[in-house]
Length: 275
Ligand code: NAD
Ligand code: FES
Image (cartoon, rainbow, N blue to C red; front, side, top):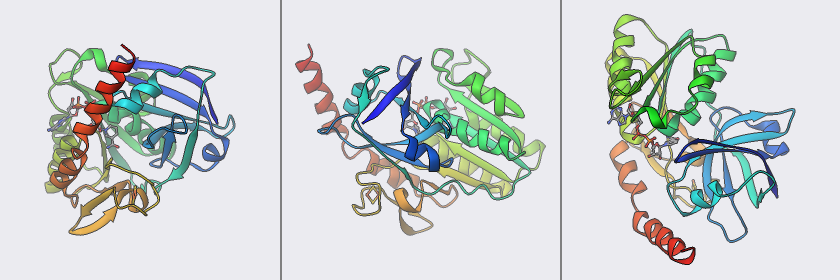
């Protein structure tokens, strides 16, 4: 069992849990993920590790309460324990040796953009962070991202905070003004697609972290199949980071929508059971 030692509600749809998981915390690297199960009958869900503390033996996961299992997870509290936390899984991010980088986080994707920015900051890389949200009410991790960014830019779609517009507008402006060696983008699939389209003409290496449906997380089931540069890859073992210029985003969007009806059905059943 993996005890919950801290819980934070980041906005009304996003929560953060810190788990006692010493064996995972000892080895995990930025970019890797764990698969968690709330209980022995629970669904397995992959979540990228948002932070870790090797000495305390803890790791933090941040998730949006979008479906049956994430709602169950969000209802758990400090002192409760989850049944499984398997990992670290996937490949650590290969940052290379950049001098100047931009990390782009979209909405809840900032939970994963933050550790990437922190890792670059700790490597001494000059790092611009661009964080985009629909509106001011759902901004998360601003303080944490500001602390590791050389320059921090925040956008909202409706202009209620920071600059009005999408992250890609700030990104284009920065790329026109200066030379960067690396862009990392994590967020909704359309955002990663358009970040990659924006960086392509500038020839800047662009990494995206993909979140396809996963089952075993060890390359056995094929559930997380993605097409990258015309080749089939499994995000759980070949990724989750890939060259953003080569990903077939439209296929990924179609595959991620496969189980929408089943997910809605599970949520309706749960709502009926609990009133
Ligand atoms: P959202 O839809 O509110 O978008 C966040 C920001 O992304 C926007 O404010 C905007 O700046 C940018 N964006 C969105 N669409 C864009 C487009 N077409 N062009 C340019 N920029 C665009 O985000 P949300 O609802 O908080 O995010 C949830 C999504 O993020 C879910 O689909 C979730 O699966 C995904 N997610 C992905 C990962 C990952 O590993 N890739 C991790 C966590 C969450
Ligand atoms: Fe099964 Fe990747 S999750 S192959």
